Amino acid sequence: MNQLNQLLPTDWASFSNQLDTNVLFITIASFVAWIIWRILYGRLEALVSRTAFHWDDLTLSALKTPISTLIWCWPATISLGFLLQTHMGSKLNWLSTLKLILVIGIFVWITMRLINNVEEFVLNKKNRDETTVQAVAKVARLFFIVIGGLTVMQAFGLSLSGLLTFGGVGGLIVGLAAKDLLSNFFGGMMIYFDRPFKVGDWIRSPDRQIEGTVERIGWRMTIIRTFDKRPIYVPNSVFSNIVVENPSRMLNRRINETIGIRYDDSAKVALIVNDIKSMLETHPDIDANQTLIVNFNAFGPSSLDLLVYTFTKTVNWIRYHEVKQDVLLKIMTIIHQHDADIAYPTQTLKIDPVHAGEIPQIITP
Image 1 (cartoon, one colour):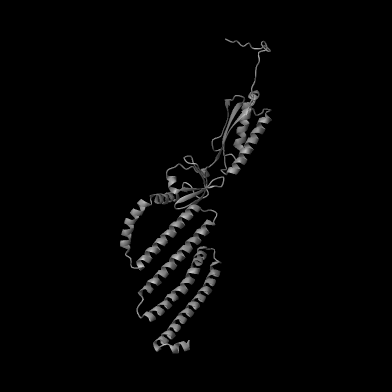
Image 2: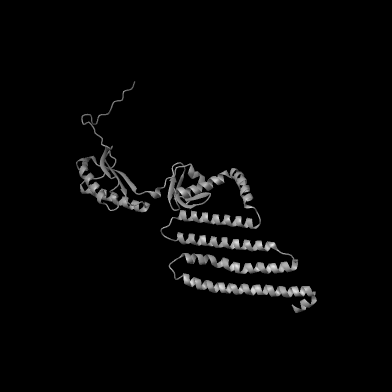
């Protein structure tokens, strides 16, 4: 380096020495600051890990990488200013703007990381509404991104009043051109606010061939996984024009069965009905507070039909069928205890013994 300085003019040599000193000092200062930050972060991490309060862990985790980036990038802009200002001999006002943009970017970055950490932490809890958590996180991210973008535009000298005026006119044009996109967006907002369903719910529409489990509610479309594992991508605007049924919010599941008794057991029907009703009223999985009907209902073609109408306490599909099976088996046991049996389709053919064996005559015109 000394030999190179001897070959250069005096001004260039002094510039090179000054440049080396400034850049080297800034780099060493950045490295020292980074080491101090790493040590401080390690101490803080050990401190917050011993507290029962989780928000300090989430905040500290969000600060880690952005602060390290700021420690290196901020001095780098200062070094760049020394290089260009000494070489060009004029003030570089845009470097101040660059530093402001750097600070804004770091702030937005920290905010995004904090929102992601909070969203992940809340979603890992047992009692949480996944749809609401995701909606709030999306709105928060969008809010800070817009604020950061407007601040950057103001840093470049753009007038926010003029920008907002232009945005109003431009928004009208874009709204007319992207009507379907906006209708899907506001349809998603209505889903978040009205909450006819949430992620994980089983929904179906009698108006459309839509039935399955909600996997994701996005800004433009909702993903529904059918029971044969096929994904359905439904634009959010569709839900404002159709009827949506949400079986996941049922309070009970219904058992509605017609059980046929043989006509030969007609004298035992009343006793069977009373025993079945008593069994259902004391069954641990039957909600006796709901409608409970056990009655002789109709004379069937080959049976005396009993109506069994009741509701289970569970709404789980698998558990419901287990309860229903138990109820039907108990009903069958009650019928057999009365020496009766369940009817099956039969026909009785009566033949007049006087004319038995005669061959019918066919009269032809």
